[in-house]
View 1 (cartoon, rainbow, N blue to C red):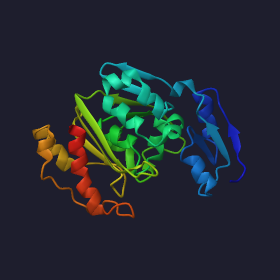
View 2: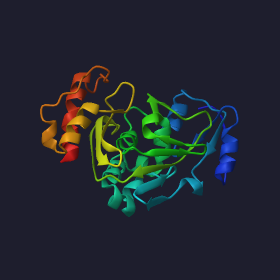
View 3: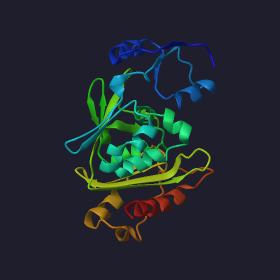
View 4: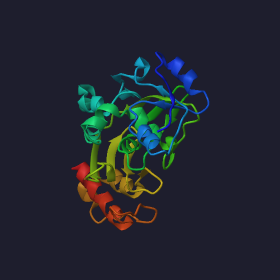
Length: 261
């Protein structure tokens, strides 16, 4: 790893000014960035540490919405009594991310900004019809995820919080890769203000996506039985040493039914 400058600003305004400089990367939990730097895949001239910013912390429940600061760790989301009451499936998802060390260091905003195609949070954000708030604007979930490791964020734009509409029903199931605990396939189902939505992570070659065929079935009959005999097209799904595209396609309706149950 090459030498780099490091700053730890006290306010979000200071962080934004520092991050606007050339060849500077913001860092929160560092679960992806530091590994990429160690492997020589990235070599920024400077890092701006967002970990101490109070503006990126906090969990609030108000008027049918759970708002979580971008700097809140996975462990804090999982442990939050407010999240467990309002959206227990979201707390469950956070509890099953990685291992204990990852959950205490990784952050909601970092996961979404990185948009790993096998990350868990994108499925919850998309299925719940969440809104991603940045220092510049609010971005609907359907407009945020642009492809593998790609989002709607502009250069230097930082996520500050995410607002999740509280659903009537929601569930999460993940078939994990045992070593990394990333999702070979993860499915989040929700029925709420945004309608019936089913989001899939880990399976799509272009990242998280909505399973519209399953949504149509569940809109007519919100039950695991409604998914019996449902098939998902394997075209465009991942195929690797862990599982073929056909295997992942077969897992999607199975996990969706388990999430409902």
